[in-house]
Image (cartoon, rainbow, N blue to C red):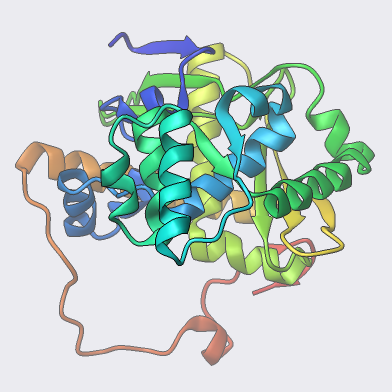
Length: 298
């Protein structure tokens, strides 16, 4: 792989198959043993992956719905007759090993079908829900502006100058001015999403994405979050991380990348360290490092 490359038509599956490190892996380097485990034990397909992918497709690339998704039939999943009906449906729609699907628990059927065919299944209720989420996004003029122009789901590959680690990012939407990240959440209020940023390390990913975009395209862009609540009325809001909080993410990203490089060099992947002087979190002590987001201090 060259130092930088931009592949706008690479599939999501092929992107994840590339050996470069994505932001999730970089964040896992916080505890290198965790990263090594996930490298050696790739995650099984989970229903949450299907749901997340569907939300992104509905909002970013709705034209692909007919290509990549099938609407589930109105069939139960309990009786022997139900299983036989599902087996016929799976076979009719391209599954090459139907027994492998229907011998699994019913909760795993959609994932097994997706692995065999590359096509995801969506229920009528799910499709209705996500179309309402799409309508909420389309009703937010700022969100519409962010999603105008540019391309969705481009794959960017680059080598970090300091550490030499090969990295990859896949912006949800990228145009000349903005990198836009779509997030679904149970609570889109500022204080709740600020907590999600901390819990899931979105600020760390943001720094890595901005670096990758700069290195590959030569452009300095701004980062925005389109946040959509998962439940009615499917509120949609656009957020920008404060400069102070974004800098915290950048410092942490560089720290984790250096740790990852050290592990790759030494092939040592340590776990957690013993700590006999444990303190309560800063928010409980009301001092220490604080993050400010949309006027809310955590």
